[in-house]
Image (cartoon, rainbow, N blue to C red):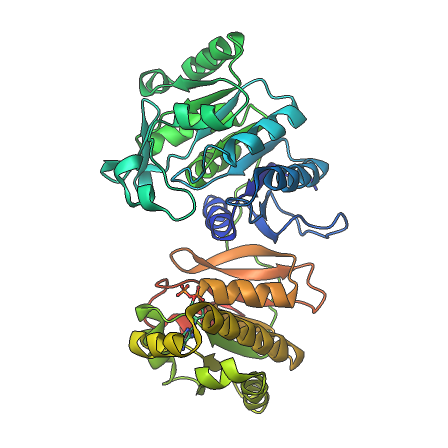
Length: 424
Ligand code: ADP
C-alpha cells in the first residue's frame, strides 16, 4: 500500500476533524492514536492522519514526535505530508509550529513550504498574511485570551518568522487569484531569495483548490483542515486517488452494543433523556465514583446482564448545578479525572463482556476510553451527524470493533439510536 497523503496533527480533535474532512472528500482515511508501530497492519487507505498531542508541549519534544510520525508516514509511501495545525494558528514565539516545520522541511529537503490555517467555510480566512477569525482579526478574537497560546499578532508572516529558523514570505490573494502557475512562480521567486516558508492567503473556498493543486506538487505543507480539503480535492481530481464511498467500512461487525456518556453538555443531557425510550439507561452516582472502583464494577455487572438482549446506556452526565456541587465537594480536577477513569474502567469491562459496538459521548471521556482500550487507530466511515463519523478500530488486539466518539454539543436529539443504526 502506498499512501497518497500523510498527515501529522498536533492534537487529537484536530486530527479527527481532518480525518473526517478527508473522508468526506473521498479519501479512505485512517486516524492513528500516536505514532503507530512499524508493524501496524492497515486496510487499503489513501491517507493516514497521525494524532499527536504536541500543540502545547515543549518544542523539542514536539519536533521529536513529529519527526517520528513523518518517518513512519514516508515509510508507508506518503509523497506529501501535511503538518496539521489549529485553524487559529495556536502557538507561541517558542513554537511549536515553526520548529516542527523547520525540522520536517529539513528531513524531506523541501525548498519552500506553503503555510495556511485558512478554512473559509468555518470562518478562518487569511488576507495579506493576516488571519481573521470570523469577522475580526486573530488578535481581537477570543484567542487573544487563550490560556496556553494567547494570540496577540494576527500577521502570520511575523508570527511564524518569530518561531522559525527560516525567513518567511507571503503569497497574497492577488497572486492566488491568477491561478496555480502564478503561485508556483511566486514560490520560486521567494525560494530564490532563500525564503523557506510562505504564508498563503485564502478568502474563498475555491482558493483552497488552487492551494491544494500547488501544495500537492511539494513534499510538505502546513495548514488546517482547509488545506487538507484542498489537497484531497487535488488528489481526486488528478486521479492519484479514486474517490471512495464513505460507507466502505468493510464487513459488518455485529455483536453487543453499548453507549457511555460522560459529557454534561445540554445536547448530551437531552440525548440521554431520549435514549431512555429505546434502551435501558443506568445513571451512575458520581459521589460513589469518586469514592472508589465499586461503582464502575456495578455498572459493568448491570450491563453484562442486559447487552445480549440489546444496547444499553451508562451515564455519569448531570445538569450544571449537580456538576458544580460535585466539583465543590471534591475539586474540579479530582472529580473530572475520577469520572473519566471510571468511564475507561467501564469501557474496558464492557469490551471484556463482549461489547463490539461502543458509542461514547464526551471528548475527554472518549480520550480516556480509547487510551484504555489501546486502540492504535481508526478507519473513518459514514457520518452519524456533522463531524461525528462511525469509526472502525484498526490493529486492535481486542478484535474488530466499531466506535462513535462525540464531543459536547455534537449530534441530533436521537444521537445514540442514530449512531447504533449506522453501526452494524
Ligand atoms: P464534553 O465533550 O461535553 O466537554 P468531556 O468528556 O470532554 O465532555 O468532559 C466532561 C467532563 O465532565 C469529564 O471530565 C467528565 O469526567 C466530567 N463529568 C462527567 N460527569 C460528571 C458529573 N456528574 N459531575 C462532574 N463532572 C462530571
